[in-house]
Length: 265
Image 1 (tube, rainbow, N blue to C red):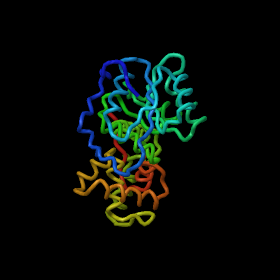
Image 2 (tube, rainbow, N blue to C red; image 1 turned 120 degrees about the vertical axis):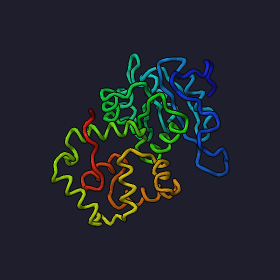
Image 3 (cartoon, rainbow, N blue to C red; image 1 turned 135 degrees about the horizontal axis):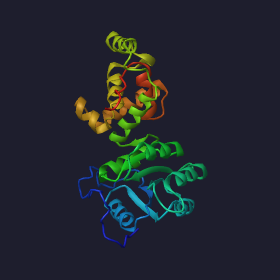
Image 4 (cartoon, helix red, strand yellow; image 1 turned 60 degrees about the horizontal axis):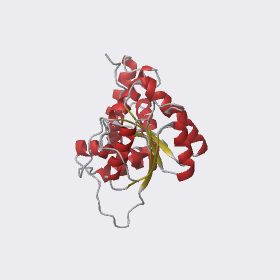
């Protein structure tokens, strides 16, 4: 879809050729069909132009508010909606809720200026599977789209850490400030006894997931390929019965494999 405006999406870095995605077409998977939703014309058209530079992405439409977004999802059946939050008539949270209720095959990734709790948690509760801020680069956007298409959560590392801090502060995982909890977690790690048949390497990968690292960052940390990391994650998901990274993090905290972050200062 051609965009008429300039490519000046505020805060979005140019993808250019460094998106990290191969441009070889071959017989690979079909392109992800994406709908862009933003009330600011320059930003919306800039995002459309940016996505047009990225291999594996097909923009099927764009909308200026949530009502138009819901209508276009019904017409075009996109795989993923890139959704702004603060818009007239129908905001991104309500639009996400309607899309997920009416068209469950379409996933929503929030792409917004705002990363505060009052924006993040209502969007996730409405059914968004991904959340990025508008300083995201092309590679990060593609990764989030691919993640939500494959059933994972497409959260940026910074947003993931914020989510974990909130869960920790709410008392969902064991309180890392209590000596007994710390000792139990440390003892489980040092004893070599892991739940659900996890291997030591899978537990190591799970610990890094809980720290908010992406697959590529985990691969660099462990000096292995990204494909190897994905294999470990698929295996530990199957063994533990978790469906996405957020559930995996809760599992890691609950079983003492990883330690919740301390409260923000």
